[in-house]
Length: 573
Image (tube, rainbow, N blue to C red; front, side):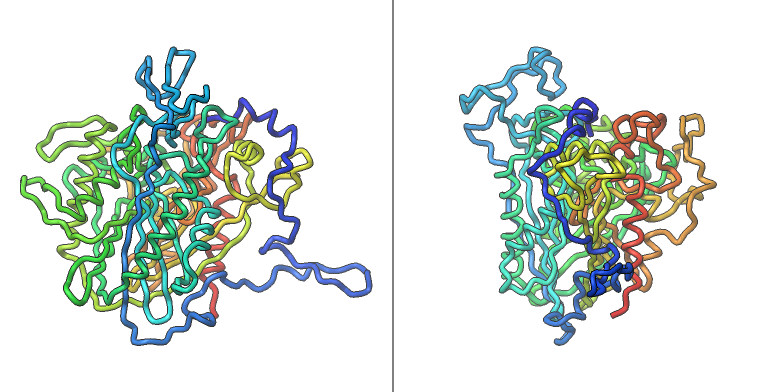
C-alpha cells in the first residue's frame, strides 16, 4: 500500500461534511438508562451478547426437516468493461506498468475528455492502468441448504470486499429465496480492478469506479439467486493436503517474507456431488497465498493463480509424470487462508514439473503454480472422505472497531474507502485518540458438517491461527528468525496457545480460516510483534519487518476482534 504522508497534514486539518456519522450508541457500548426524573443515571454496562445471525436457532430458521443436504452453484462474470471509452497506457518508458507522465509515459484518450480514465489495477504500485484482459474475473456462489437453513458462500475475484459491499449483495438477493446468510470472500487478486480505493492517479483520488462496484454487487447477488434456483440433493466430500508434503516442499509454492517464518501450509477442500448422477456440483478450496504471482509489471486484468487453479480442478491438469489428471467438472471456488505476513510468492522457488526453474513472479509462474495447486487438490480428493449429508449452521456478530491508522484516516476523509464510518464528528478536526472514526465489521462461523469455516475481516497473521512459535510451521531450508534485523520479534514474549485453529475448532475435523471474509480491515497482527515508527506511526514503516502495521486498522485491532470472536464462541442460546 502506498504512503499517505503527502496528503496527511491537509486531510487531518479539516473535516468532510459528506462523511457518514452515526450519532447513536454503538452496538457494543454501555447502555445508559434514563432514571425518569432528569437526575443522574448509571451505566448499566453492555447488554447481554446476542449473535446477529444464528441459524438454526431463531424464528424462521428452525432445524426441522429430513436432514438432507441440497447444493447449487453458479458463476457470473464481473470483469470490468473494457470498451472504447476506457483509456489505455500506450507508452511506458521504463516498462514498470506505472503511469508517470514525468517519465514520458503517454496514454490514448479514447473518450476525448482530456483526462486519463483507465481501469486502475489494485495492488503493488500505482497508478497502474490496465491495458487489456488476460482472463475473466468472476463472482462464484455455492448455496447450501439443510432443513430450514440456507447459506451462500460467495467468492469474488476482487482485490478486496468491504462489509458495505457484502451488505449490498445481501440486500439484492431476493428475500423470497429464503437465503439466511450470505458470506463473501475476496480472492485478493493484485491484477484486478481497484475495489479498495487507494490505487487511483494519486494519494488523494480513488481508483474505484462506482459503476464497476455496482456490477460486482449485482453479479454476486445474481450468482446467489442462480445457485439457489439450481439446488439439488447432494453428498459432501472432505479432503486436505499440506504443501510441505508436496514435491520441493512449501517454499516451492508459497513463502513468508516476515520473521518469524510461520506458514499455515494446509489446504482444505470441500466437494459437493449430486446424489442423482454423481456429478460434481462445486468444489470449494481454501488456503493462504497472496494472489500476486504475476507480479508488479503486468498491466492485464487477471484473477492471477486462482484462474489456473479453478480451471485445473474443473477441466483437468497435467501432473509431474506428464499424464493428465481428469477434472471434476462443476464449478470451483477459492477463498484466501491466513495471508497476513506477506504469505505468497515473495521468496518462492517455483519450477515446472520438468524441473525448469522459474522467476518468483511472472505470467508463466502464476500459471504453473496455479496448475500445480490444482493437481494437489485433485490428488487429495482421491483419498477424500464422503458422507451423505452435512449439518449446516451459521452464527455471526457485528461490532465497531476503532480506526487508529492515520493513513486510513486520510482515506476516510478523502472518501477513498467507500464504506461508512461512525462515532466521530467530521465537522471537527480529526485527532487520533480523541475524535477518530469507527468502522462496523463482522465475524462469522459457518459449520458445514465436519468443517468449521471462520470468516475474518482482514488478513490474519498465520501465527495467530496455528501458533508455530516453536518452529513447527517453519518451512524447510529457511531461517526461522533473523535476530540481526532491527526490531526483530522476541518470540519468548509470544502468546501461548490455544491459537485460533484449536480455539474455534472444538469437535470439528477440519477448521478453515477465510481471510478478507465479508470485510477488509487490513493486516491482523500479534500484539507482541506490533511495532510502529516512533515519528510517523502508521505512515512510515518501522525498521525491520514491519510493513504490515502500516496497513492495519490499528494497534488494538487483534484484541478487539479476538474479544468479539470469544463472545461468539461462548454464546449459548
